Length: 163
Image (cartoon, rainbow, N blue to C red):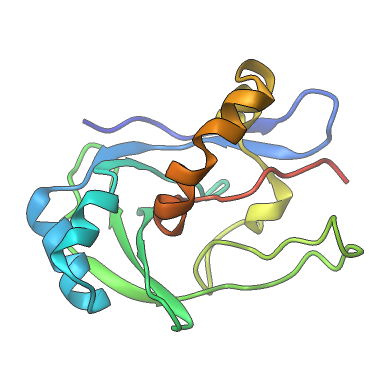
């Protein structure tokens, strides 16, 4: 199942945000991602089969991070077109462009090199905003150790503040 992309301006922030296209990663592609990354099969438990494109406005294929590659300047990504399932995984170099803000507010783009539209730190993620508003901080601290283990496979990491 896939969804649609709608890029809008976040209320009162001036930042653009996305409602990412969604899809599902087939189990064979998860296995291929583990093999490409050169990690053990236990990493399959860290891969979320639910896909959500975190790119800003774009035409063509949607993308989602599948698995980080430790010590590498890249990660395993998949892509798909609206209405279709992903059919491959590939290693794409990290974008890594920084936002040039002072320490503590600095951030690095979590998309792949050459991605369309804006960098991840310039986009407002409505899912993370919902979590910020509706999940108590104490609960986030309680589950932090669980998420630390799977953090490498989460797309669009970080909470982005308006500039």
